[in-house]
Length: 520
Image 1 (spheres, rainbow, N blue to C red):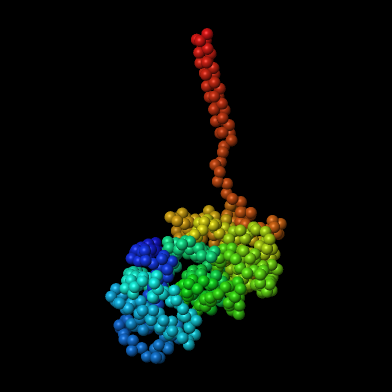
Image 2: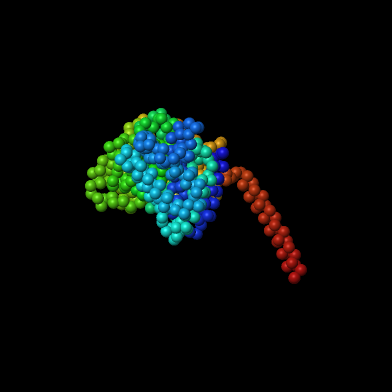
């Protein structure tokens, strides 16, 4: 099944599930139940496959719970990070979902036991709280137990109907596509919450390629504002897993999204010992300081959100911000995230960061930070993208590429604002077929060649003379799309027109003279 067909089937099925519970569950809450059920199905199938180990004579779903010895449970948790008994598997729960009068409490018990199976094991922190947002006893599902069970059953049976074979073999990011579809249709602010925007898969793909460019091996990949983990996963998809030596790291401030990110790691067969997603505020309570530096950093931090900034006098001495000599404005934390990324970046790596365009030309503290970045020769490339690529905003964002291993004192600017394909609600970057937008950007990024109206490398001294303005439009001349006028042809046409007007006036004068003669 092609990626287009898979995506269409996924969206159709989700819409059908939505119709079954329409009017009873808020769209945003509904999102959590669908994604939670997708995750529950995945880890069930994944765990069963692990136990069966390719032995066609074993059908884990048909075994009895009492056949699972303590050694089997312990070994499984150490390997997979959790344990699911046969009776707890998604497929067995789905069989009786429509008739199970205690479905909601049974599910709650199963989720609690899956999480608690990791207690005392290295995976405990990665498993704990994964199902927190899947509240099967919530009145949001209905006031009565019967109502709750009917709606839970509708979601379970709907997810059961998805037929994509193995999740990991899909052409699409099943979880990411479901998330994208759900937030674009049901979120009150179309994916916007506190300044952040869900990163479309095409943009994620571009960011991953920029950060990983020409690196055959990276120690680890990091996202300081991880969201649902889509950027980390695109980095995994783009390269063979074995070149990522120590795994995937990220931090997320929103608890719900933090759970989604962890689910997404499992959903893409990244074992608990190969990822570490932390919960907390990256700017004031950063994790992984002892783990840095990172060879690849990918990020779409929240746009221009408030942060404590200068109200905390200790931050100016923070290793991340001190070198710049100034903090990002309290009402615009964008450069705080940029400086955080730079601090965590290794000497061989790259960071690719989605940025609000205003930070590249505004004055004040942001101009001083740009001076630090340019004078330090950390800015490799600034890329301007087309508008309306993100759900919930038409902003034409930029991508900032940072590097600590540049071989010249130049900064590249790429104007990719004209690269997009128009779709129903949003523009998209294409990465397939003849009109491959991502490939065009990457070729220019790799070559560093000047291409008329598209890319240009500029001496840092020139940027300094331009008040450290890093706006792409200041250096890449826009293509003149006005119609070319042939002056000679235009003059000839004017002469002809004037002659016609003179002739017409002569004829009118004759008519007027004749009328006046007749009157006289």
